[in-house]
Image 1: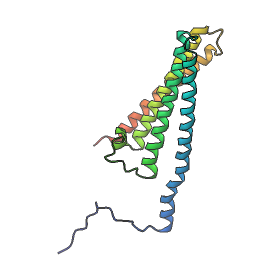
Image 2: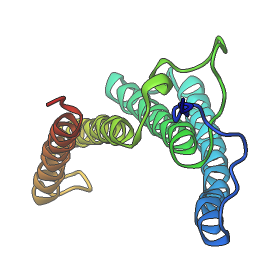
Image 3: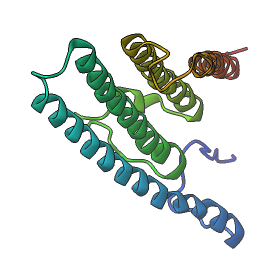
Length: 185
C-alpha cells in the first residue's frame, strides 16, 4: 500500500539552493524603503500639527474660506498619511514578510484580504481622494481671489481637472482588471 503525501502542509524551513535563496531573500531590501516611509509619516505628523496650530492661533482672524482651505490642507495631510500606512503595512505584508497580527484588536480589517491587486485598487482610490482635495482647493482659491488674481491660470485648472479624470479612469481600469483576474470561471 502506498502512503499519501500531504502537499498542503508547509514544510518547516525548506532548504533552498543558493540562487533561489538569494532571489527570495532580496525582498528584505525593501525594508529600508518602508522604514523611510515611516520617517515620511513622521514629517506629515509634524506638518499636520504645525497647520493645526496655525488654524487654532489664527481662527479669529481667518474668514470662512480661509478656515475651509486650512481644513482641506489638514484633510489632505491625513489622506496622504493614510496612503502611506496602506503602502507601508500592505506592501510589507504582501512583498516582504507576514506581520502575524491575527487576533490583534487593532489589526486593520482590510489587511485580512490584502494582495497586490487589492492594494493597487486601494492606492488608486486614495490618490483620487487626494486629487479631489487638491482640485477642490484650487476651485476655492480661484473663486476666493478670482482667477485673474490667483496664482493659477485657467489652463492650469483645466489640466488639473483632466489629470483628476485620468486618475479616475485609471482606478476604474485597475479595479476592472483586478476583478477579471479574480473572476471564477
